[in-house]
Image (cartoon, rainbow, N blue to C red; front, top):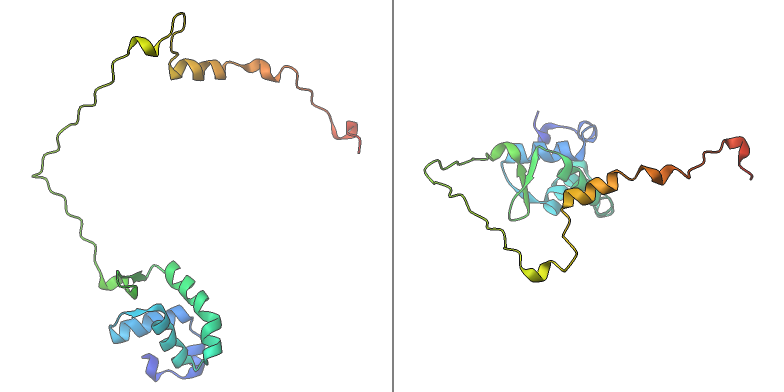
Amino acid sequence: MKLTDMTKEELSLLTYVEIAYRYLKENNVTLKTPDLFRKVCDLLGFNDTQYASKIGDFYTALTMDKRFIVLDNNEWDLREHHSVEIVIDDDEEVEDEVIEEPEETEEEETEGESLESVDDVVDADLDDDDDLDDLTIIGDDEIEE
């Protein structure tokens, strides 16, 4: 049933987003958020105060509904009117990029110190189980209020 054929009572049973979906589908147009919600409000017989108080919720609902897509010109359309084309170009060869590691200089290592690897530092941190030796667990009845 078309929106124009529905009574206000029948329209009031639909969500704003459902009305917007049907409007875009029936009229095959794209509209910006304020214009689309104005169409919804006109169908429902809402005044300007109701329009202003509900447009934020309408926008939020549109963004969460996967049936809608916002276009580059900030107009809403139905996702079903758009297709995504994935192009894979097998002819183009990808060259492996060789990344050279910088050579160590004598300045980076000071006398008597050697740089530790990240693995050595991580292993040392994981082996510190003695941190819990001084931990004492007390029960609820031992806690003073």
